[in-house]
Image: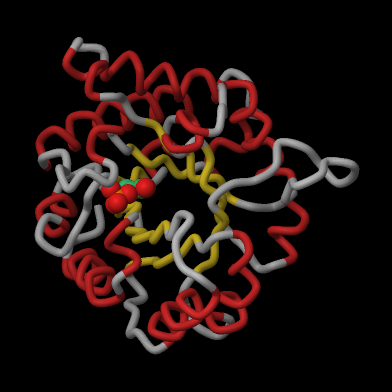
Length: 254
Ligand code: PEP
């Protein structure tokens, strides 16, 4: 049985006071034991968010990690620092990092390795652009992104992965993939995971991300291979985020 996860990616939004008030609203929320919840504040708000969420079930994650270790790497935030701040998850390979910050296959593999060796759990984001989808290449692109990380990582750590399928054309556009479109890709990913890890591939969570909101979440969560959501914009509005979470809590875990 896969327990759903609803994760909020705050991206580069909000000042400290905003992070604190969002964290306080989350700390006051009511959470089901059947569905995990996590938030990914900007680095500079991690400590304040953690202090507020410390005794709540809300799990803390980081939006990125340095591909380097400790030392002379000016400006980098390494895995030991993230673990020390109370992070559990790290997002790796978000499409904004791939397209805007030059995170290529090599950097992503190093980030996965740093995440795992810091005792943290990677959420690996994959997804095709609109051009790739319209060119009939969505499957090759998504599985290619998975292959490229897999061939460089320690396969024994495979069960620690969470996958987030985030079609680039759906992120921040208000145009979510339909449940059918999303489930088709999640099935490709499930087959790939089972091919690499057998039973552990069945147990791996695959989140959907891309314009998830209170209006489309319930239908998405009904799909067999959608095990939760990575939520951007709607995670900044507490009522919207709670509504998405409620839909997850009301859906059956598979
Ligand atoms: C994201 O950035 O991971 C995301 C899914 O954003 P949004 O929900 O705003 O589309």
